[in-house]
Length: 195
Image (cartoon, rainbow, N blue to C red; front, side, top):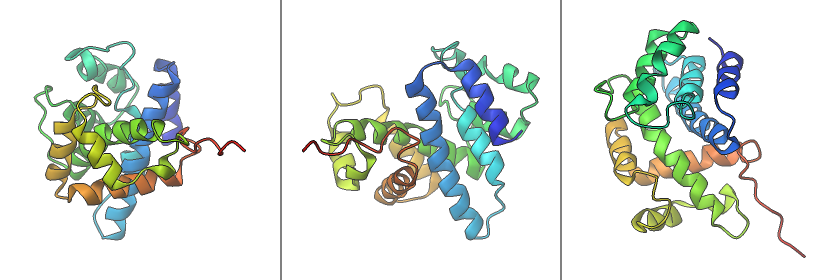
């Protein structure tokens, strides 16, 4: 399966623009890590990583409750010819699935999922509503505010960085930079200041 096929599945099952953008944001972060690891000589297939990230929440609108998501979505992906490697990674991103995160892909998907959502939320409260206004310090401050972006699991963000073996601040900065590079596509370019 290639990226275009994966995106077609996302668009078939997800009508909500914000959820589609979340899939793109997670893809952005995961793909950036794929490029980084490939440059370091790790055996990484960037297309597999891209497809995995795009599809990780494809069934959220039809299965919005745990444990239905992603367990009930997995057979749909199997019918569509999605590889076992990708399906397993998607199952492993849900902590309640019972599928342990073992591969670098699985750990990266988990590490990027909640963080990408949180970075989007932080962008939306900036004056220009832009990812370009977001920095690591402001993200760490917002993580301490329990009332902010309540749906985002802070423990998953911390655990994700730990499982990936990266410093949390470096992980946050890396994902911010990746999302800045695709800000317009993610709807995070922001508004120009009013004159």
